[in-house]
Length: 573
Figure 1 (spheres, helix red, strand yellow):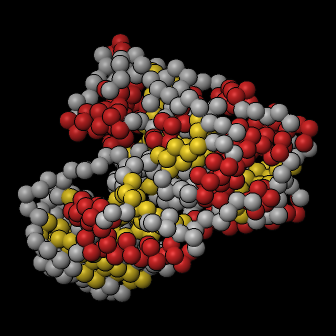
Figure 2 (cartoon, rainbow, N blue to C red; figure 1 turned 180 degrees about the horizontal axis):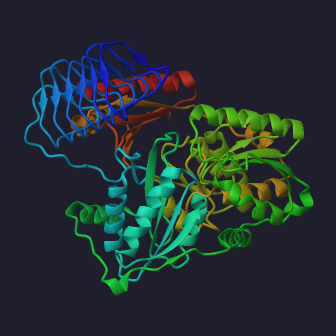
Figure 3 (spheres, helix red, strand yellow; figure 1 turned 90 degrees about the horizontal axis):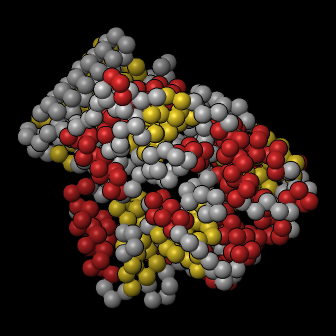
């Protein structure tokens, strides 16, 4: 890239890619097919062929063997030698003169000051928070996709049907073809939905399939993909199902079909009409046609725009749709671009004098709200607004909320005669409660809403239809509802924590709680005598610990967060 910084003498091989903001200094040697990402710094480094150098990495006076991946923000110091086909995890630190032998894995956040000789390379966690995730053609390759799909097919019976879907990115399209081939050659029939919103993929999976696979771009990371596995209900694969798949994948015990057993491939028709019809039959839309509402809908150039024509036409609302077209070059969006899109949406809502505006995420799973004045309703407030509307109409039942949600949600639910069932931060747990009898609503505070009468998983379109019906029947504006809900003061912070000390961190937190109330629904939640609370939760896939704190104001919440962040950091020293 013309904004890369190169200071010779240095050598760069054929087909290497050096991105903007990368800096390569004197006496560095870059082999063929090497990728150097934005913000990387290399000085006197010798990089062999087919190496991936991640963002913000710092490599000085070291040698990197071929086919090795050096992930984001890793540091490798003078005299270190990394062998062939190693994985250097994110934010890890390799001290000077250390030798890492071939085929080894250095965990994310690790500090290595002695040579790594005997340990073998292996993936400790195949599944993360969003299925199997990684950088396209570095961690997620066609070979991996084939092996994963073969392992998944082996966990199902011969002749079973699996539904496949993708988002609108080229990477997802290419990998889905590999997945379909592996499924068919493992005696599995495939229903390919092609490019559809994730809620549609989940709903279609639940219609007679043994499971489903959705491939999408990782939220906020355009160079990464998520391979998501669904069960027969269209929900994320359970922990037991993940372990079973992980076991088959690790042992490479793939089932192959005999020539006469090769699976069939079908492309179902009228998928969107089927989804829309089921949604409008399940969700209460009474009063919408008579209310004369005007709404603005931003499809964010994602797959949600594929459902909107059939949905809005049958709702009977005056709708202005913006950004309906698919943009293959932007399969996801950063936090900044999403914020800018919401600001533009607010301007359109205010000038059009609409009742409210909604913006979908690129796969139609989540949505953000803008009130009639054009003001953005933050995701945590949007959860309380939806909760207030649903609870006020139903007056009984149970609401599913993760334990990291403000306790004002409990006050809002109790005011309307409903009760909260606290769940873990895992979407699986929200889905479990959403499926239970008597549940009327669920949400995660990050734009994900569960509308149990239609589905037990996050569905942006279902939440949109439910919201229109509620606003039409209550005759209240979103700003009026927002104004009557008390302000919440929940603050979140992430503390880097090496993998090796995560267990001792949690023990230290429990010990430090003393005689204060402790809840271990998910992580450790400590409640102070005055009602303030802090929650400490280790990340299952990264070398970090998440902390949440709530108090009567931001200052007290921040003070509580500082206190417990010190506890976490001291345990890791």
